[in-house]
Each structure stands twice: as C-alpha cells, then as structure tokens.
Image (cartoon, rainbow, N blue to C red; front, side):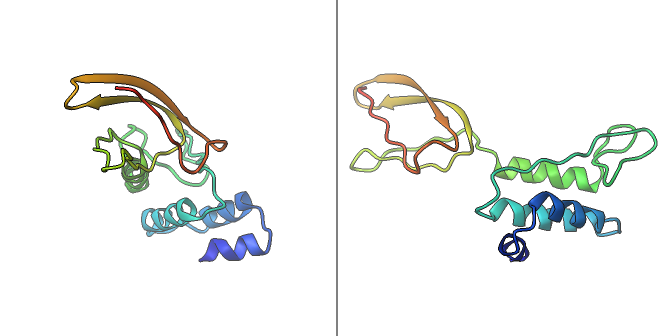
Length: 143
C-alpha cells in the first residue's frame, strides 16, 4: 500500500494527501480521488479524512465537488457515494443464543432500542463510540 510507505518514512499524511491531490489535475480526477480516499479510509493509522474543497466563483483551489450552480461534479458524486457507503445506517439485528449482537460503528453518538420479543418490553440506551472506547463494548440491559 502506498500509504504504508509514507508511514514508514514518517512523512506527514497531510503532505502526502496535498501532493496527491495536486497530481489529480487531470481527466481521471474522480477515479483517482476515489482510490485515494478508499486507501486512506482503510489504513489503520488514519483516524479521519478532511477535505478542503470550498466553492469559489472563480474556481476551486485544487478540486471542486460542485459546479457554480452547486450541482455535483464527478468528484462530488464520488464523495457522496463513499459517505453513503461508509456511514453507519439504521442497524437492526438479533442477538445470538448467548445474547450477543455485533455491529461495526463509526465514531459518534447512538441511541439504541433493545426489545425483548417474548416479554413485549423494551429499553432505550445511549452509546458513544470514540477513540477512547474499548474495541468490544458490552451493554447489559434488563428488558
């Protein structure tokens, strides 16, 4: 992976991304952007992605996501597609025989509704997932 080489050389990720974005000034900009974002997202050292893509009537600094009428360009479509793919949606599931349910969640605040089917009861509980959260979060609920 290219980003592994950057980490091994201890290059700042911002420098790498800035240099890469600069090189995207061609007809394959959207495809290259998707490849770069997917690689960054999958790298264990990356804790978040920030894109500075502010609109300006005279054009964008490096890359525009929309045109002057705020209609998505191909790069904007890529970003929207990846956000939709990566975000935590409404998750529904059933516990296994031991009462465990597993889900992968992004950092954020979640409201959970735990329902017991046969007892016809439910509990609402909040959950925060952040860098200080344990890998496995165990929630005990009496329903």
